Image 1 (cartoon, rainbow, N blue to C red):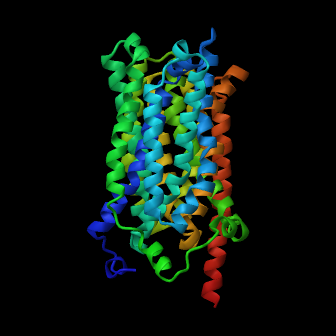
Image 2: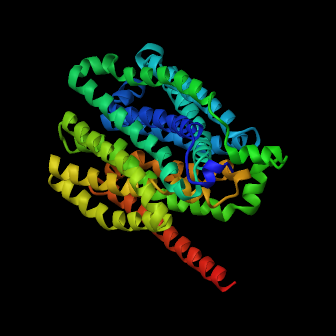
Image 3: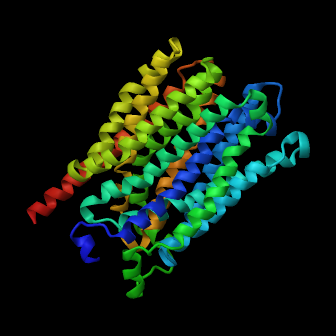
Length: 436
């Protein structure tokens, strides 16, 4: 560790690595956000059906399929970060993300090429998910390992700021398209514009990543010839409990984030009949709030404890989400929608801010990228990416407008229980150390 890191100071090289690491999450969430905003249109173009709900469900299923590939990316790509370097991994994932965005942007519709259109759309989402599975853990490892010990909560939170920034920019882009283009123009070509933008940013992000310094902790292991030959074997043999903890503690943030953003747009405008422009504006403002609060909660976690912050957020979400859904479904308005998405923004940011530093501390550096990638991406695949699909399916199955809150409650309960267990283990460990 360098003198600057020991003294708690960040070098220019560190700052450059932190910025470069957060870009990938931003691009991925930008694409996912616009996909969620235009889910009904994409569904109609690639999965035509007389029932619009079936088309939307098919679109959200395609959205979810990409997340189901994230564990595969974690298993196959993430070990590159522990054997060849975080920098190499982040270059590979950026190339894959850029190609997938471009593919979606220029893909002909079902009316033009028939069944090949939905097959290729699914393929590009699979590529995006596969890349995302390696991206998140590599970026977190790079950020945290460039940060001083006493600032890892704050610095690591900027990986999740990329999450918030991607949602924000995607929401702004969707809002502008809905404002300045006619509905027919959006159907014809407007929905493709954001994916073109994402594909255009990817080469710039790749250039930046290729010119950053490698993680100092990875370099230290490389110089000592202590890099793992089979990181997957070591992770599953010795660190499976840590992976389960990552899945549990990461559930509420991923699920709540996608419910409040990707699902809520279609729910508020399509199901509750609220004006799409107003819905987009409220979600955009909530995204700004979330993005600004994430580093604040990361900083608080450096002072007060990471498990405490995430645990409190999970408990509050568990208490609030059901009455907020009831209020919105019975009285759909800007006020009730704002109340739900702003509350979610505060609690999701509290869940996300401390998360990178917390789960990084669960594992030693030489297998860190592999381990946190597997844990977080299983949480994202099982509970986050499936949230819009499950929430939409619950409404179609039950006819109950409040039913999506049941899924949200289930996810919040998982993280609450995990936080309680982790906090108890942390206190027992602290007591043992004091006794010794």
